[in-house]
Length: 215
Length: 215
DNA sequence: AGACTGGTGTTACCGCAAGTAACGTACAGC
DNA sequence: GCTGTACGTTACTTGCGGTAACACCAGTCT
Image 1 (cartoon, protein in one colour):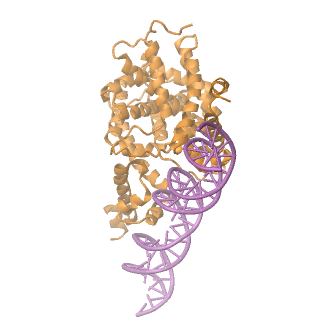
Image 2 (cartoon, rainbow over the protein chains, first blue to last red):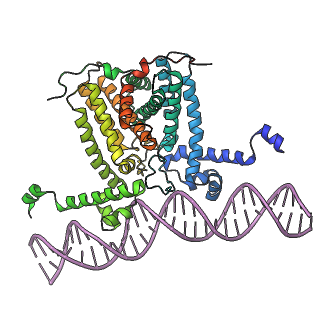
């Protein structure tokens, strides 16, 4: 099997191996949740730790690779929902629903992605706050912000506004989804409708209840 | 010093000690960030590990105690902002600003609270998804939901709606704040205004840009 | 053929943090 | 004086991330 055949056939054997390892990692994360150890993943793949480290550097590297895999898949689904040929409200609802359906379908993987526990080599900066935390959320926030900037006319300061909104909406979706996944207080459709209502300003429009601020 | 004096004076010596330990923990978390070890905390308090474990059970217990402290403080501040005698928009803005000012003032503590790394005793349930994850967010979400339910007239299904919105808004605030803290793309006031605008439905009101879905 | 190289795999170890056991010590109340 | 209880210690176990050192098996160059 020479190079020409390899490129048409599939990837180089190393990449093939990497895929297999990632799939094994996926399986064990699915089974054991976020606390999956490198040993367990290696065992699932039928090998031992050092090989994992040769392929991914450190646990963060494996995490990153897994995250990119799933994030790409999720983002593709979200983009599809975002690009549907209907009105904005419907697109927003279907995007929310897509996200929620995804986390509902594989909560273990989702939690692994969201709570990485981070190690960080401490980049000699006493205050590298910000580089931590779920990159999945960041990516989704950035992408959504971009979509908003591309499609909605926000007037002056549009770009900054769109990014803020992207991250804010993603955070809203995430927190509400996380809570909902734990308590299941209502159907997915109800949740979607409520969140869309929130984005549609129903909080601002609703009247006060009698007996408000008591002084 | 008998019981009568103790209760008027201050707490029992054990509680006093506990406070001291928590303050030491606070200091080291402030200094070392979320990766603070039990050893480091014990050293800062001038004692050794087992005492910490006697007081707090395990690291989760210490984390929980710390979280409750800070969450209580933060929630008190938020409630104050929420209860200010002005119109709803102003109250929302001041609440957002209070939260952002807090995380800006002590990002290390904030990150420690948000990324606990969880251990979990694995409650023989293969799927205890939900009990994990930052309890701070959950609590803020619940409280905000309660405030909304108390003060805003949402008609039928109000309670469920209010809880969803509580968690959603808190998540929005958190994600946007987290991102903003890392990149500082704008002033705090700008961020507050943009987020309030989002909640006020400006996303729904804004017109499309020319050249929308291009498929 | 035989040495050289690169990739795959191993065992055995280090360092470090969580958590625990066992022991020591002061000081209450009988 | 003796005993329980709370405070404190040292020294250990366990488990995980990460690494070093070595072994094996292609091909490949001379």
